[in-house]
Length: 398
Image (cartoon, rainbow, N blue to C red; front, side, top):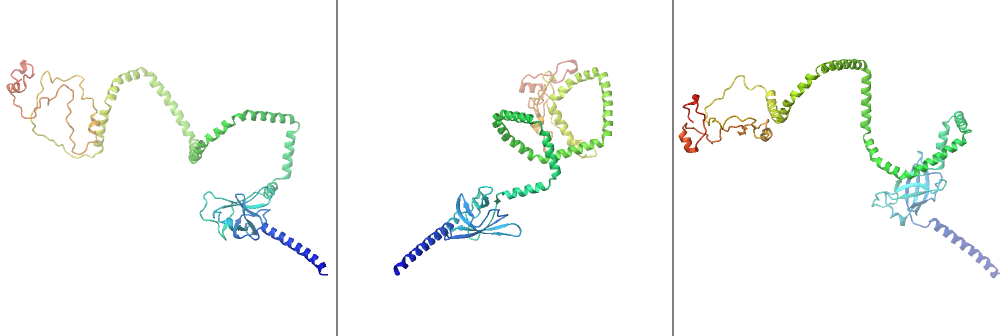
C-alpha cells in the first residue's frame, strides 16, 4: 500500500517542481525580480499600440519597461516606467524621450536619446520627463484623409475625375511619348546633377542675403507704390511739365544753334583763364576760405582805426639788381597748407617769405639805421650797384 502511494506523490512533486521552474523562468524573463526605479513620462498621446510591459530602450539596449498608462482629460497620456536600477545611473537627467515603433503597424516603445549636451546629473527616482515626439500612426493619416474627404463635394469630384478621364481618353500613345521624352530629358540632366548641387550650395549665401534684406526690399516696394500713386495723382501736372520742357528744349535749340560759333569762341577764350585758375586753385581756395569767416562774423567796429608808427629804414631798390622779374614765382609751395591757412590760431604772425620776384630788401642784412654814405658802404661791402647817373638823378648818393 505504501509503495503504491509513493509513485503518484513523486509524479505530483515532479509536476509541481516543473511548474515552479517555468514560473520562475517567466518571472525572471519579465523582470519581476529585478530592482526597479519609478520614472514618469508625460506625452501628448500614447499611441495606438502602446501597452503595459512595453520596452524602454536607450541606444538599442532595454533599460526598463512601461508599467502603467493613464489618459488625462486634456488628451495627454501619463506613462509610468520601471527603470532598471543598475542602468538608471548611466542615463543623464536631461535625456530626450520619444514614443516610437519599428514599423507603422508595430507596437510602440519608449526610446531614450542622449541630449546634445548631457547633464552631469543622472536620472533619479520619481523624475517627470516631457516626451518630445510621438511617431505618426496610420490612424492619424486616415483621420487627416477623412477630414480632407469631408471637404470635397462628391459631385465635383466625379466631374473632375470624368474630365481627367476624357482628357486622357485616346491619348495613351501621346502620354507614353511624353513619358519617354521626359525620361530622355532626365537622362541628359543626370550628368549635370553634381553641378546643379554645387550651384544650389553656392546660392545659399545669396538667398541668405536676400532673406536678410527682405524687410528693406518690402519697404522699397511700398515706397515705389507710393511714388507710382503720386505720379498717377499728378499726371496732369506732369503732362504740363513735359509740354513745357519740350518748349524749353525747342527754345534752347534755337538759342544755342544760332549762337553756336560765339559759344565756341567764348569756350576757347576761357581755356587760358580756367587753366590759370586750375593752377592756382589752392591759393584761390585759401583766399576764399579766409573771407568766409569775415563774411559770417559781425562787424567789430563802427569806425575806422588807423595803426601808424615809425620804423627803421630798409635798403632802397637798386638798379639793375632790383628790377621786377617777369614770370616770377613765390617758391612753388602751397603756403596755405604749410602755414595752416586760412584758419590761423590766435596771436599768429605769418612769417616773411622771400620769393623769387627779382628783389629782396633783406639781402644785405641791414635792419637798423642806415648812414647814407657811399664810402662807408663801399668800405664795408665793396662796390655796390646803384642807380644810373642821368640828369634826373645827378647828385643822388650811389
